[in-house]
Image (cartoon, rainbow, N blue to C red):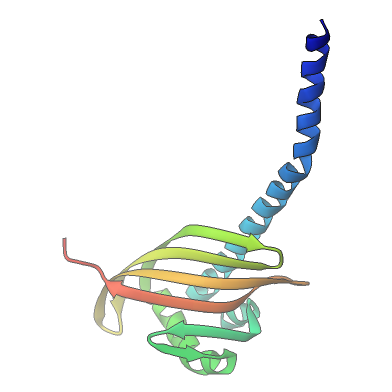
Length: 156
């Protein structure tokens, strides 16, 4: 009889002790979703040709690594951003989130893409990978670093 009373109490104690972990997991899931949403808004802004919206998602000290080079915000705004917008508008792409890790106010996102189309009169058939590091600010998650790489897809 004593065991019957004790087992439900053990269950309730275990549930109560796991509540902070469950709440933390829910917070982390919400953070992960917000990080993915920020990345998706960035790509949507590029595809829409909205440079102001894309730039608003970048931190002032952002670093963009692409094509063997590194650019700060001013360099990206004046150099690669217009080409990224032109590419995103011309070439159909599909993206897939691979992973999101959140550690306090820092998150890193990894994803892949497949692109098919024509850009500047050249056929494009490529696979891409991206890594973005984001930080939480008062206005939400902002992109602090981007690393993009791509390669031609093999003929099938």
